[in-house]
Length: 270
Image 1: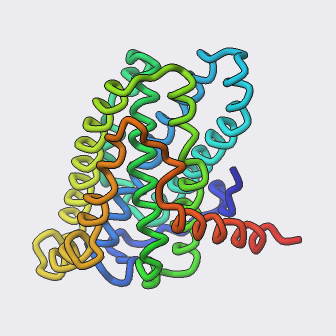
Image 2: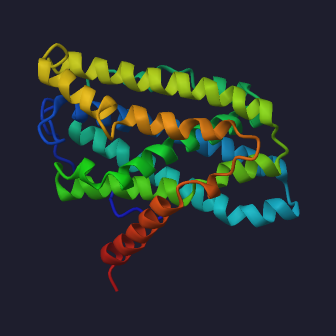
């Protein structure tokens, strides 16, 4: 809900080949790829939650969820605006954004519960990535403090609202089979899109075939604390019929929420 970054402020474009993540082309373009996809992804999640809340009407469950849903929408809107601004600063405007190739009209053509099931799956994936960020505090050490704070702020807010879409889905009567079907769809398409965007960025940056690029990729994904191992352990928990986002990663979530509270107090002032 609270954004410490002004998405409408003046920006200074940096050359696209500037490797802001510690000089690593792969890490830079991987996180650029995530940032490039966030505005459209978050627009769709906002649409799904807003539509579902309207469908729930004025039931007791809807009244209980209304405040958290408004916070979710406000936070996701802030993330979208901040990453849109970051993309202007850091990424060549001539580079294609693959998520923008999705036909926008199609989201309204899907059943509203299916759109909400997609959002639940996306929230599970982003929560795991956010927990990874807080379990690996050195991940963003090579970047400037302002960029480090931006990524940690986004991750912490994803953790803060991790239960909302799932709670709305359950309140709306969403079933297990629909939830799992869209989980597999999202895991496949989201990873394919992020990797396609990363490879596109690297090719346009002239870094695709350099040995260091793939050494850094191996360490990020397959190293001792790599993303592949972490996601491999935690993604499948979503398949449990009794899955609840609230019951997962409690220590890392507590760390993230403490960081967020401290950060808000530091940036908002007295």
